[in-house]
Image (tube, rainbow, N blue to C red):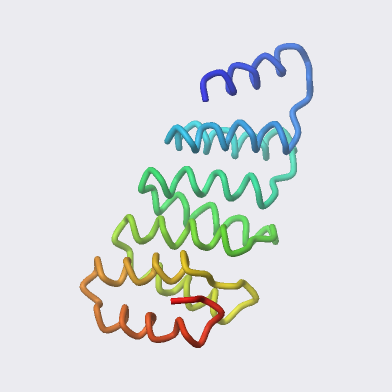
Amino acid sequence: WEKALQLFRTMAQNSVESDVITYSAAISACEKRLEWEQALQLFHAMMKSEVERDMISLNSAISACEKAGEWRNALQLFGAMAQNKVKFGTITLNAVISACEKGSEWKQALQLFNEMLAGNVRSDTISFNAVISACEKGGEWEKALHIFSLMPQSTVNS
């Protein structure tokens, strides 16, 4: 990740303009090394540089927060991007639900999961596992069982 950031900075020093691909690559490198603060700085720098943020950069930034247990930041990023009409999908919502699960925020995880089921975003095994785990951590075993019972009705193989 350090080499990726060094290359990113060298580009700027040499007046090479960064685009969504270079920012996303740098954010992804930070995410993989659990450098969530650096990932968020890069994500916010995109806006200052007037580089359009996309689903890939969003997923990388949210995943960096999710892996670090930074559920509030993951929710904040998701909320801001949804307001700005940035398209998101299953991977995005799974990362936010997983962040909530890691933060023992079962109510938030369940709310996002219900929005996923009600909307146009397809749930998958990861979605179900994350929300079931969040409910389990919150002592909500009845809700976890109910969600598990929904799996055969969805396109997910239990």
